[in-house]
Structure formats: C-alpha cells, structure tokens
Length: 212
Image (cartoon, rainbow, N blue to C red):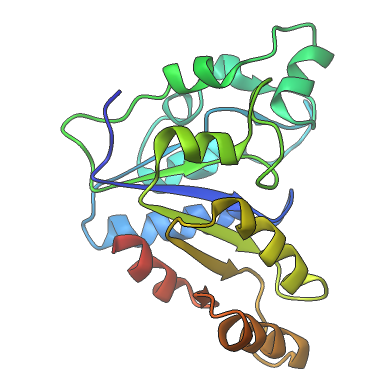
C-alpha cells in the first residue's frame, strides 16, 4: 500500500464532535498554501434521509478529490451506527479491518499529507474486529489529531481518548472554543499546564502542527 509522506490519523472524543468540519478546514488551508493533500475515510455511516453532505463529500471538496475516492461507495452505510453495526442492520457483511485497509489507496507520487478520518471515538468500531486504535497500530501514523469539545467534560474526554495512543505523537484540537468562555479557557489551561498536552484552539496553529 502506498503511503503519504506524512500520515495523519484523525480521531474524536465522540460522534458529532466536528472531526469532518475540522478536516475540511485544515485541508482547505493546506491546499491554499500549495501543499499536496489527500483525504480518506475507510467507512462512513449516516441516516438515509440525512440532508447534509456526507463526510466523504466534505473532505473531498476540501482535498480536491472525488467523494468515491475518499470513501468507497460500498462502505457508505445508510444507518447512523458504527459501520459494522450499520452493515449488519442493512443485511450486508460486516467489514473487517483487513478489508478496509486493503481498500485504502493513496495518490502516486505520494502526497505531502494524507488525512485519514476514523469514526466516533477511539474505541468506536470501524470494522468487525477493530477501531481507530487498531488502525493506528496497523498504519503507525506520523501524527494523531484528537478533535474534542471545549466545554463540560472536556478534560476527562481528552485524557481517556488519548490514553490508547500513548507513545504516539498526538495533538488535540478543541473545536467550538470560545475565548470569552471562562470554562473553555480553564480547560485549555489545565490540559496544557497540568497534563502537559499540546492543545490547539486555533486552526492555523493546528495546520502548522499537521505540516510538521
């Protein structure tokens, strides 16, 4: 399997935390700066009547690719469940990690940055036999980006979500951060000073870290 020069694995503390929005913003900024990028999402799921664009469509618009390249159409499940559950609920075979990673292809020659988005939280099943932690163990990404909320429960969610990636290069982005919110500011300060974590609240700073 080909590999980007820099592989970034993107996880969230939970579902609907804003991973895809953040990915779109980061990829757009990188492309604007002339950086060759590609986005991949091995599997995705949403309700069939969801009026919004799919995660693959959002990422594809930002990376300049076809949504079907970002996520194979047969891995787009029309039930809002973890992909293996969604597959089973719709009468399809549950994908395995081997199958999902076997379908994962990147442009040649290698792009500078490959953005690989997972589903839900770190332990949310992507395949029948694995999750984002499994994918990290298999692919050994250069950077893990954790997208988290900024409000109540942030510290606990961040620490629990980063624990399975101990020993890896990780950075955290607090989505929807409000600099005028005292709790948001205190959460950032605690994570940075008490936990010694790299935490971003600004997209440009996140982009700089992604570039390496």
